[in-house]
Image 1 (cartoon, rainbow, N blue to C red):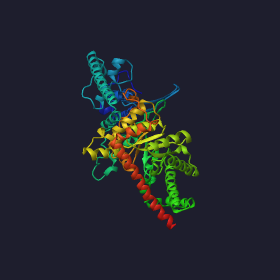
Image 2 (image 1 turned 120 degrees about the vertical axis):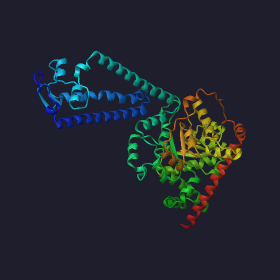
Image 3 (image 1 turned 30 degrees about the vertical axis):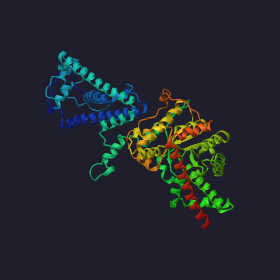
Length: 556
């Protein structure tokens, strides 16, 4: 027990403060600062996480103010433990001192001010252990002059850090107004934790898996560009907001699983490329076996085999994606409404034989007049959802929406190809004519409340994709999916359905006027050329694929 009567002479450090207690006191300071530093880091991480989730400015205010608040508070537990020790008090029944207090006995300065208090002053204790240069005890600390100085310094510090917090809030609000919220959060992470960009080389010899890399991957869990693209959702009229749907544009289902697409699209060109890989030989064998059983002559067998092969690939893809797969009707039927409908229903029947419901299938049709009318018949009379592809103009898009098509695929990259070839110009991503075409269609649909989904397709580079962030769906080839997967570039939302309502867009109608549709479509030289070219390319690839299948049938 400590004697507080003051009768005992003040002890010297050498007499009453052992080297062991001195060492323990130093460790008190070290542990206290470490605990508060760790707590500050955790709170800042939580603030960043909550900012990313809620977008509330208050968290940007907290980020710069947490360190000074922590620095001010860390002295309180240090002072308490040093002068009181650690005592376990169980409901007043008994007290157990878990750790002794380290303050020297006979605290005369504390006794003089607080009477019989057992608490020594901070200054006296630090003077005792040699950490302070000027004694004076609690009496000096409580003097009016010192108190005023402390109040002024405290208020000044408080105002300064409030100003810093306000500046952070202002920067955040500005970033939100300019759709740069994700970029700003990333900047905060980089600033707070000093993590290098993920594409920078690490310490020599460690490569991209070194300790600095792992540390920053933990602290800076920034979504990659593909995840950001998925998060750039849009809102349909009278529906809740949803994540943007990323669709894999590939028949090579073995390569798309890691990107976790919602849907997938195929066409004869993609199936032709995939069918040349040995890992898909079994699917071709299954299709050949089916074709030989369901055809009288070689031509019928080849036709049946092609249909079966498309369904074989589609069925395997549906084991990977949770949504839908698009299967294309032979491009040779692009100008025949009746045959397009018949072929579409046959494909649906083949899927049904495999136990796959039509709700998971999109029938892919070229956006000719006949293709659009076939989609109208399939949607309205058979409940079969359609994907109108090879779309290059707003005229096609308007007719497709009037036909009630489930989805359209306006092409981006092929439009850019045509303009680059004919104007000999290079285009920035924001000036890309293919991007502008999809933006125009998207705004028209949202302005007039059409439910048809806009799925941007045929991309040449990542810039085209990110400029359409916010579009309903985007169908992306594996090579570009890989670039997005490995990138951390910010992907702000560019297309917003709520903005379309204020745009001055003229209402048009084509579904019930074939002559007007053909005339207006014919006025767009680019669209006419690219539609013709696309149909010819798909038809040619289908012929090539049939040739391969015929050889296999003849050898089987």
